[in-house]
Length: 194
Image (cartoon, rainbow, N blue to C red; front, top):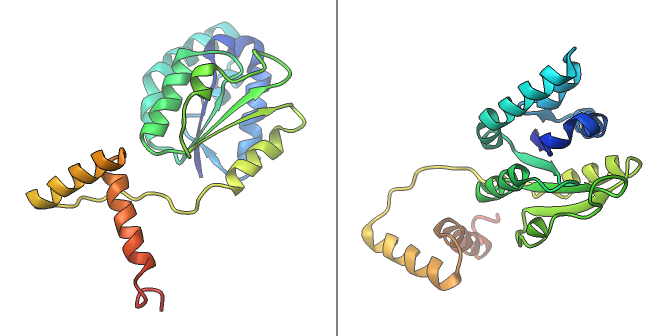
């Protein structure tokens, strides 16, 4: 699976080892990290230069990298507007997000703005260095197997009007509304289940 890892770049100097632990666990579980900026920061000879390079690349590359990811893992041990934005962006693209926060450093709680998000694609978990491996493994084990696939669908004005009406009535997106309708048809089609 392709993973984007987000964390506070303002805390990278002090917590690079902690962030690298997350990175290593993800890699050891067989996943790929999209835009592996932690590795670049960790392997730079000059830490000061590395941090400036990393901060610049995060701003320039994170949006594109999130779009190429299957999952986002965000360390929210420290409040960060950019990490909050990245979490929101991933969720808006229907990308599952694991928000983790340390019980050993930082604010020892997820930021209230993260806690306020109500999405089935968001999981918020605390961790210690000892429990981190299991927290990440459990998240991957519990991911739904159905990944959304994007395709174009040309419709008539009447269908468009119905989708607009249904999505407003149900207070969900047109895509979610259409998926619900098709899933009901699939569940009730005896020929398909043969």
